[in-house]
Image (cartoon, rainbow, N blue to C red; front, side, top):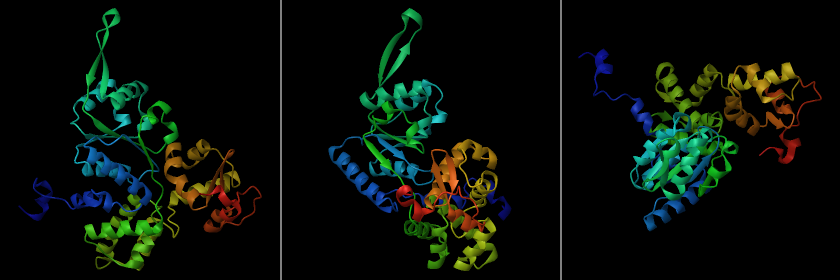
Length: 348
């Protein structure tokens, strides 16, 4: 077999398998979110001492911060099986019933995008979460009857980027509510350094600092940029990731020193050039830039707001003076939103 046949060999292990190990399996290896980790560690320890299933967990926060990773950590720490699905994949009650009845005792059942769960499935989940049973209707018409089917004790981990869209009855059944926030650069740097060690990448201190500042406060983005810098280092350099190589790579990827990508800058320019700095509604802005409203609100806006370039107001989105300065656009509109210093507590 020649070297070109390796991709057809079922025994061949691609390098991407190593990258799947970037997710930590222990809570102590999970970087950042310290208060969340401390509390979750106590809850896990208490449940293990009582030899009970952990209470149901509600995780909310922007995408890419580690909600799925935390679910796998909970399963690992509890020595339990992990079952993963997403709400859009569950179309009928029998889909959910099949998953619940096939769980092993103590399993961790992870449902992503739980805010998109259908009402009929929510009703089934209420009983399962509280009584570890599901109601199943047998027959039709006057002969129909409800049968309660037991399910093994389990821990439901529900994850969402839109906590406000989760119904109150469902939300109230979660005993543990955890919020993940965007990471500061120093915590992102620790994640990058850990990932580079796992991937066996030579990475200097200045390069990791530069990457951490451009990772949008999101571990998923940080690991993606690290992989791309590895490609640039392999082809354009000597295999080592240096600050100069990171700057060159970020320029090629269209990422600036604030971590803004071309679409981020396009959002700001669109508001400035077409809507005189705002305000403009989310749906109108999404159409203008060719993105869905969900993508705009869940991915782009949180970082732009955190960096002080964008403001949400009751009338719509408005750019700040920081955005004008960052884009090099002359500030000539009175309708501009104030910057972070002028805003005071309006910016988190």
